[in-house]
Picture 1 (tube, rainbow, N blue to C red):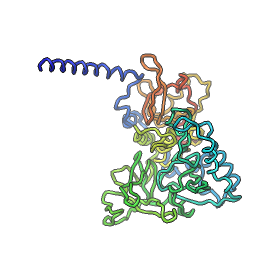
Picture 2: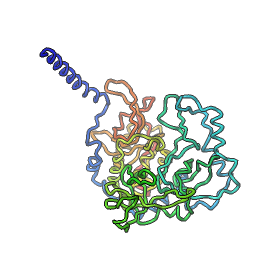
Picture 3: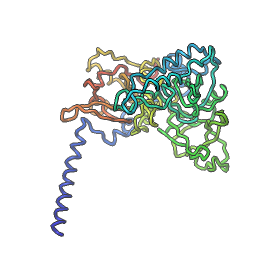
Picture 4: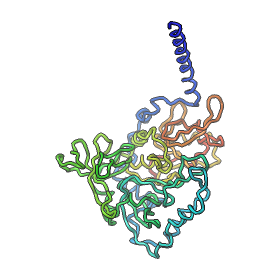
Length: 461
């Protein structure tokens, strides 16, 4: 027995020594080290003396948003939509948007059959579009996917690559207003126009109402803004769950709700009573009270537009899993930026390219011919909260440390060269803080050399 104990002790020592040896080497395999302070927004904010300076007063935010809408074709002011739209124009829009996905593959790795693709095209129901189409109106009742085609079937770029569903476009959130322009052949899907996107969504995630009520919902006062990355209202027996709410969602607040009057069987003793759109008979809009726990970060107005608040809000998402087009309950790189800005009251275009082209912010274009040294100099002029754009990706600068630029981004994959000199792919698949210089493209080029636009948080003059 003593001999057995001695062997066991030696084995434990060997195992412990192995773990001690492996831990540093596995950590050192990456060409950088992320410490706890790198993941703390306060650390970066403390290094910027003007971080809490207001970049745009709250009373000027609405005018700034109007400027965004006026200068960006990807944004649509729903108040400007006519009572009816031209049918030929709508038919062309849907046909162009919902093209036959002939080059995509199913999760099995096989391409969708011709019969399935034909069915999807028939489901577009283009022949049913009249010469003049009356516009209907609705409020989104739950977080809802926006799709290229009226189907939940996922399609991917290549066999084995099942992370990025290429039919997933974006998402809408409770209380978002949409113009309902068309329905699929089975009327289970609606083609809708929101202020930032037009695509297909499930009809049963919409509550249909009159134009005035739908468009007025977003400005109903008083209201509360969700500041948490994600939140959920208290359980509601009528819908058998709480309501998922994301950063920047704004819902009317019943400030004078009696404390002794229950909502869904629960007294609002530690809650805000909010009004949420729900589906009533025949899918018509009804407004019902829900409870938001006061432990969840929210406010009666957007946060002040400052670099510090951009960082604080961005760091709330740290660790959230990547979701292409807001898939899987997450968001992607441009969706992350849009939600951060929504919490300070600013509307951003949905996609990276449209954000990068925006002229509403002070910006610097980096031509492909610009050398690496000049690019580093341009980066050095940025401040925390400024944005870096490259084809298909956006990052937010959080600061500089020991000569390195650190960025917050919702990233899927990047290539790096490890300390052994080997190039390897890192599947971040989430919101991370990383140094910028080690990140490489598939062909080995530095991400710094791929940057096309640097956009400051400061509004353009």
